[in-house]
Amino acid sequence: MRLDDFDPRSLNVEDQRGGGFPIGGGKLGCGTLVIALIAALVFGVDPVQMSGGLQGVQQQQGAPRSTQAGASLTESCTVDAASRETCNALSSLNQTWQPVFAQSNVPFRQPKLVFYSQAGSSGCGAAQSAMGPFYCPSDQGIYIDTDFYREMEQKLGAGGDFARVYVVAHEFGHHIQALTGVADEVRELQQSNPQQANALQVRMELQADCYAGVWAGKNRERIEPGDLEEGLNAAHAIGDDTLMKAAGRRPVEAAFTHGSSAQRMEWLRRGLTTGDPDACNTFRDLPG
Image 1 (cartoon, one colour):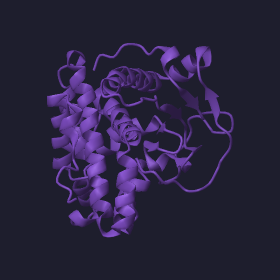
Image 2 (image 1 turned 180 degrees about the vertical axis):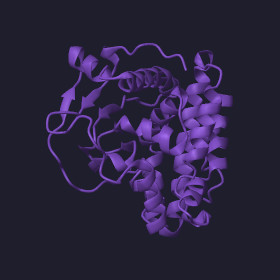
Image 3 (image 1 turned 135 degrees about the vertical axis):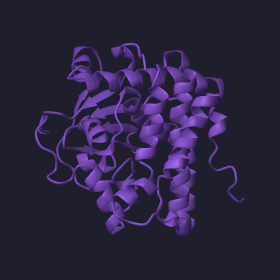
Image 4 (image 1 turned 90 degrees about the vertical axis):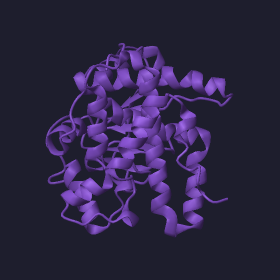
């Protein structure tokens, strides 16, 4: 996907690489993303908490080093190609969604992008590489350890630039849910009806997939040959049923938290095809 270079004046970036958080080096032992996700499915741990979830281990590991503007932000966004690509994607997402919110008379606030390596801290607790990318509503941060992209390609077979920016766009989708109040409504429903907590979480994740597709659909002229296939392949690779099979388990829909591969592909495609946020109402058939 052809993305313009980011505008440093239009981004909010925090960099926890360095300043007490090691840059590069090994991962958390055997805790690579795919092992963590498979372990979560095998042992019944909610993958939402490990890959895009709202709760982390409640452990602070040092003060983050913020880079809000100017040279420092530029340096953070150009540490490597993955960092630049992530900043370019965030810049495009901000520019795409801000007018959508303005048209609906809903206040828009840009999320902050937080780079970390191996371990960091968020408003939701500790950030660890094994968690994968996640969104924290408490500080409206999208947390990325860019080593995840390599894991995604090597372990899950989901490579390509569009697959990578789809990850950022999906987490941005959770930011949209926070701004519109959907996230709070769903949390209240989950608390009042815990038996449906997983099913409601699946709807949240599928809506975030759809919003990622909407962003791509609104930038259709920037999509290159093979991008759609990369995105759909990534959506398929991280479906709950596919991960359960990889873990040697029989897929059980009641245990899904992110949706099946088919569902994730369907909602990503729906957003991309329509370019319309209104097409992303995954809660339409809820009773009441």
